[in-house]
Length: 403
Image (cartoon, rainbow, N blue to C red; front, side, top):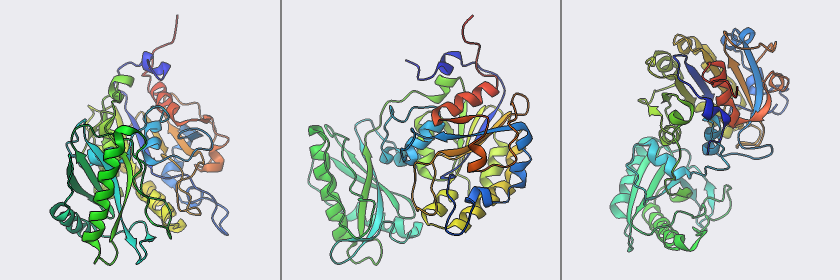
């Protein structure tokens, strides 16, 4: 059954939709600052879009619910994240082109720093460099020895992030995270949520114990925290649901993974903001939906760095003309969730969104693009899953409903 009436009305045409997603865009005033980073940023190129735009606020899941990155992006792609639960391990695996099998169980892990009492002092191991990550992953693949019915495969992702896959038969994928999401406490044990996952949980605990033994002499990355333990779920393709030919321009594996999971063509990863915007502006006309992902706003928010978040937004705005060279008929600028610098984490606050569609929009008179301006914007406040159908309507990709 279709999740949206829009799916029943979807039609093909040659109009192009671009979703420019600044990860963790939403924020709060911070300390003595009376504006959010988005409100404080100088965005002259975005400002030129306002006379042909409408704005609003969108809840990635529902009001009051803090989303992970996976649910946030599912909402952006028109899925109800309450009905499609996908573990981050699966997304990381797909993001690095790992050939994940239907019977595999995948988990994302963070290298972390543990003290002598095995308490966490840094959940991200000081954001170790990629070359250090690869060295440590090679050690784990070479030295981890676990007796059990499944093969253990470890892969590097980036910085402090890695992935472990258990490959075997009769493994359940319903296991809770071992990351307590705080410091000063010990990592949690892998806890099965159903009987079929008991063996999976035991094997993951053994893997973590083995990893700590192997990493014990490392200064920073001497432990592992497991997150998003799951098996690959069935999910309908975005192209089939909305009659689109979709592609993704994204650097980080997790976002490449979720784009691939919903059926997008994933282009080669760009290097930085400038490269991302340039590639997005040069994408072949065969694609009529282009997902463009910028990670660095979220990283600044998680680090509590208000000024760096402002700088990233300004950098995106600086290179916006390169994206606009692709002449999108509809451009949406938004985020997947809020990551306030004051909180250093994801939050439940709704996400600001701007929809530019010069041929079809009813301008709402917005004079700026920011959280408070979007509160009174023409799109109002809606669940995020409605944003793509609205964009499809502005691109004249939805037929009339009824006689």
